[in-house]
Image 1 (cartoon, helix red, strand yellow):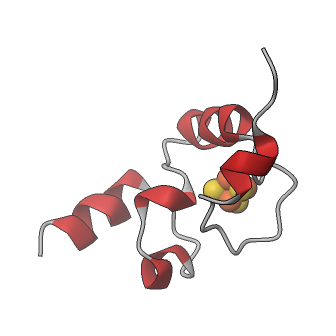
Image 2 (spheres, helix red, strand yellow):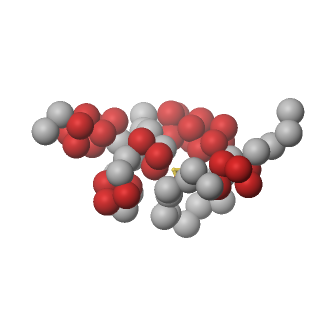
Image 3 (cartoon, helix red, strand yellow):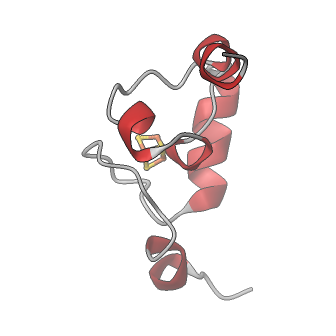
Length: 63
Ligand code: SF4
């Protein structure tokens, strides 16, 4: 299967300096292992907090 990194980059809202940008398979695996969600689950402002925890996701979506 061909890597779609360049296409994925068009959808990536992550501002954290990270070498997984555009590689959604590695990105989700990394955050899943840590009990987190990737940047694209958060708004632009929320993403910039770099808090990728599920707790934070629930907090900002149940206000
Ligand atoms: S969401 Fe996490 S793993 Fe994905 S590019 Fe951003 S910092 Fe890297």
